[in-house]
Image 1 (cartoon, one colour):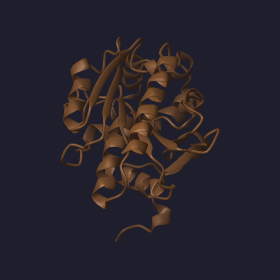
Image 2 (cartoon, rainbow, N blue to C red; image 1 turned 90 degrees about the horizontal axis):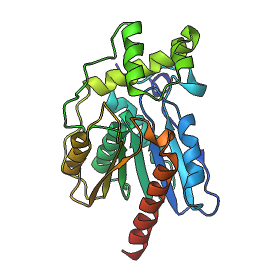
Image 3 (cartoon, one colour; image 1 turned 30 degrees about the vertical axis):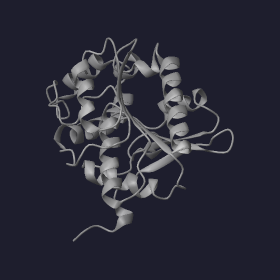
Length: 261
């Protein structure tokens, strides 16, 4: 017997309103273990007519202690239910690392329901879903080995990794998300027709250029691959401004194309 809906994990959407009448909505899907907070600054670098909506999964930030998702399908289905509540405004999807896989899975579910799809998808620091991972599974590693692997990715302050109490909060949602990433199978389907952008860091040792290039197979539309200065988390580091500018350009072009169609 299935559980009542209110006892199941529920995804939420954190909204940062546009600074003027919203003409574009940017849905952001965070990396494994992350809540919405690290992505909030992106809104300030985007055009004033863009509303930023960030996926907030349970078990992190303001939702610590809430039941987490353990399957990609349940996670994505919950997000789709929230997305469908939003007014129908042209949108762009951005997914970073684990979030890129979530974003594409959400697109598959939207497509299956005949719901509006985004005008484009930005897949950041992520191998294409059909590519096998270059990394050994890490979700079930012992704590010390797990922390060592996190250091390899960068982006997590050493002050966090060296603090056992902070790790008690930080590690559980990260393990859950990585467990999903390491075990799920991408929903099959024909390539999408919207533009797809594969972004990555030049010094990322975990996601190689051919992992990014393989995203080309998921669209019949235009495909663009671009490398930024930095590693796996380049968009929070030295390329923060460049990433914001690139997304702004994508939004402007996409919206122009949508209004002239």
